[in-house]
Image (tube, rainbow, N blue to C red; front, side, top):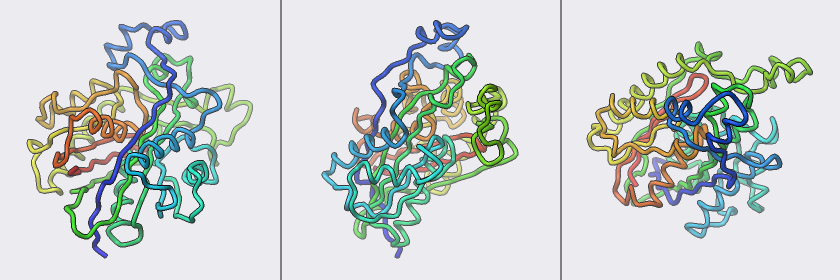
Length: 329
C-alpha cells in the first residue's frame, strides 16, 4: 500500500495520411484562411478506412513499450481512454491486448470522458498503483474522430484528427512520485452542446438516424469555447494548489489541443508565458483524449522537458468533463 508512481515511458502514433486545409477547401465551403484564423489548425492526420482505434492504440503502445524493452506480458493493467471504441464490447483495451500478442491475463477496460479521457485515466491509474492493485500499468488514449465527423459540416469537420498516445506507469518504493496531483470535474447539464446523438441505447441506428447524420459530432462552438477556457483555467489552478506549487513553477503547460484561441487564452489567464505553452494543434487538430499524451511524448522527444521538469496537462471535453494533472519527470 501507499506505493509511489513512476512514469517509465511514453509513446505516440499518428496516421501517415495528412488532410490539409487546402484539401478541405475542395470538400466544403471553407478556406485555409478561415480555418487558420479561427482555429490555428493547418492540417490533421486521418486513418485509412480499414483502421480502427485499437490499431492506432496498439501502435502507440508498441512505441511506448519498445523504448524501455518491456513486453506486453509484464503489464498487469491496460486502460484505454476512447470515445471511438472499435465496438461496444469487448473493450478496446481487450482488443489491444490481443493485437500486442498478450498471453497473460491483465485487467483491461475502457473509460469514456471525451477529450479529458487521458487525465481521467491517469487518475485511475494512480489510485490502482498507490493501492497496490497494479504494478505495471499501460494507459492509452486513442480516438479516430474522422469516422464520426460530418464532412459536410464546415464548422466541425475542420477541427478533428486521429491519433493515439500511451504511458507506462509502474509502482516504486524508493523514488519520488511522478504524479504530484490530479484534479477532475464534470457537469452533465452541458451534455447536448458537444455530443454524438445516435448509436447508443437512447437512439439506436436506423435509416433515419443515418440519413440525418446523427452518428456524427454536433457542437455549439461559442458556448463550448466559453466554458472550456473557464474550466481549464480552474482545473489547472486547482491541480497546482493540490501539488503545492504555483503556476510560475511549471516548466511546460500542455493544454488540450482543441483550438489555438483556447490554448492561448488558458495560458494567458494562468499567467504562463506562451513559450512555456505546448502547441501542436496546427499539425494535428483535435485528437480528443490523445492530445495531451501525444504532446507530452513529443515534448520529451524534442527535449522541451527533461528529467526533473514539472509539467502540467489540462483538458476539457464533452460531458462536459475537465481535468488537470501535475507531473514531475
